[in-house]
Length: 92
Image (spheres, rainbow, N blue to C red):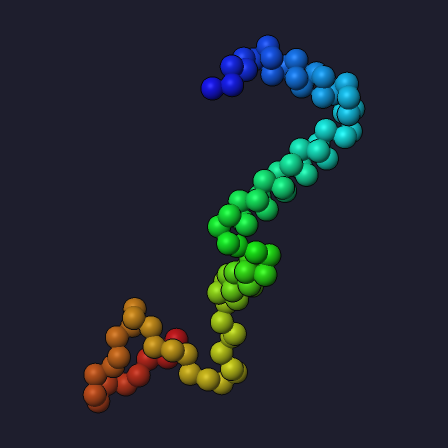
């Protein structure tokens, strides 16, 4: 493909380290990653507004329903069958 072996990659990294310094390399890598991500999003037609709307929709879907009001009857569960006509209802 490009013909870059491990020795060439180490040499390139060393030259970059000398040019930019150890503190600057992570910032450059982060900027490149952000640029690549934005480029891919633009190719797919995804913008920041749709990403934020999707995140908000996912957050709303993950929130649990509000607790039932005090004094309200609990919803019937599938574990306990409904009592037969004429049979007393169990509490608890």
